[in-house]
Image 1 (tube, rainbow, N blue to C red):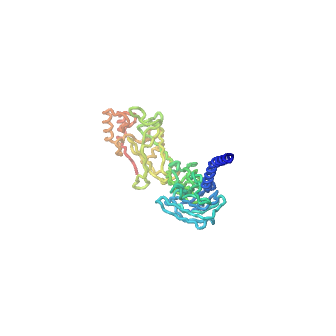
Image 2: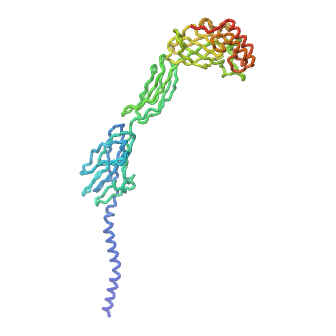
Image 3: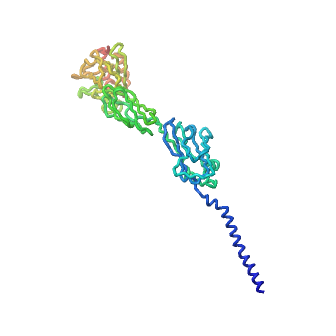
Length: 463
């Protein structure tokens, strides 16, 4: 009986041991499968393409460096670039540990090519951090292109590392393991618009011109027209205009180690200040020795201080005395002054010709010199200032243009009187040519003033 009990106890013990043995067997099998994975749980090396600068058509060598390159038996790197922006020239500086490395470039599309670098060895390789695997050599054609690792094509299989067991290493997210490069184009963009005055005067100084900053420019080259002085290597310049300066282009362009960019131009007109003084008989006020402002039906026709408008011409000093310059609608002030700007190229002597809507055309008595930085001519202080003495005395020492040539035929005569008379009968008012005295109404006063000059057979006198 005792023997039987012992047998029963031994059987029960065996049955209790069976689950433990099963669990042990399963654990050993699991470890046999997973142990290589635990042993190989390793990150891929950090791989970096170094950015660089280059000029258009310049050659650049781009190193690929690695860190954490430990126990590596295989490398596959795919590097993408745009062949319309970069020309691949080959490689250099291949690391001695990557013997029998396969490197090839493969066109993918007109704007995409890939460089494949493939290496493997049964003996794991270790490299110190920041070791260079290889240099990729390019010629920059255009733009500022990016050279990038492609860790997504073919499920990432074209860009990966393998460990000592031949297993791919963790390299995701891609940005944590692969650093792309940009080739910064140092070529200079065209200069932007020049900011500054487009009209200056002879003798003027401290005139500032500038241009927006040109990226990559280390200096600026300014060029100035004849008679302009100033110097600068920055994006602004202060200039002076001498007494003989001529109109022309100011230009500026950027400069750096790559060369010069395309320039910007600003045409600057150089003028001289001209002042002519004259009186119009019809507007002259003997009480003030000034002119009245011409009127229309609402009051003063022009702004404060403006008596009327006139045209001015410059004529050659020699036969046939051709018109070489004309300017219209000049402001004639109540004090008789009329100021305008004349291009600096006019340096000779010219006849000054005054034309008005209802006064007789009048020429200067002689050609006037315009050789300086300014010119002044006063018709009012002497009858002799007009060619042939063709002015009317308005007050003591004051002379002015004859009133009444409303049809501008060069003579004050019956045809002018007829036109004024017709408008007077029609009660014309406003800013009209037949209103000779400029009071805003065509009436007998205009007829009388015109008739007096017609009786004296006043006409244009010129050389």
